[in-house]
Length: 245
Image (cartoon, one colour):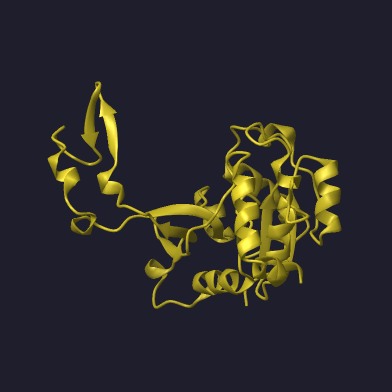
């Protein structure tokens, strides 16, 4: 089995939902949900939180995660890219001779996960394949869109244009959705990343990403999303029991 770490980003400077990563959901800080799912996933060897905050770090430790370093402020901004904090973590681990084979990237803003599903995603990335060319560069979770993206539109010079269309005629957009390809939306349920691929390419996902298909993943983007999450948790108390029971 590969050496696998879960890496959970939890910076403190969120402006859209202040302190969202430590805001309570079902009497647990939001980040604790991702920590708990990772701790209960058999294939994950270590659970590390990458944060720029001592306070956040203490909360993460209280819920079972490791916080062996603090993320530099310059890569903990609204404009920081995922590859920056992941490379920072890998560099720190490499200095300790502890660099993993796989990184399980878990965003706290997607709290409802099953450890069984996470294990399946890791196995998808770890499975031996017939040739090097067929091996995934990453695994990324997606869910089916409620309607095909091919019915979406953009505004081109003040005129509506159907996405992917060569003209601005909109009549085909009225066709039944069954006439278009099914499309998927990437979500924050899980990304499985290869350290070797990241080191060789400087990229996280690359051009041979396998889909890990989930049901609709509820995520936090705005403050009112917490109301939806609390309501969903009230209807499905087993979500809490699976991780904290």
